[in-house]
Amino acid sequence: MNSFISSIAACTLLVAISAAAPAHAEDMMKSDLLPAETTNADAMTTAGTKADCMQKAEMEQDSVKKQEMLKACDAMQ
Image 1 (cartoon, rainbow, N blue to C red):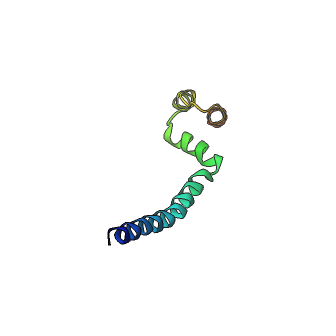
Image 2 (image 1 turned 90 degrees about the horizontal axis):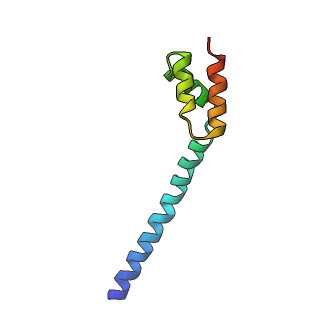
Image 3 (image 1 turned 30 degrees about the vertical axis):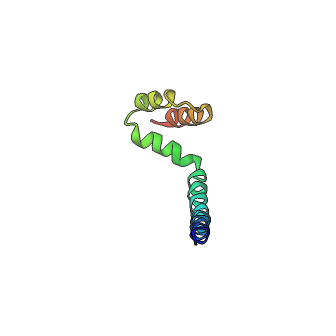
């Protein structure tokens, strides 16, 4: 009886993990597929002035993102 309950618990755990994995993978794919323009637009809208934008871009750790943000800041009037 004890092994029967253990196998039911193990099966339930496997079913729960199997159901949760695709949902998590879909969420991760959606967040990875955001266009680069969104990042540039966010940098320009959250930074009020060109100086604020440049400061925010300089604080960025990712060099590719940093270059994109700097280009977006340069395009500001």
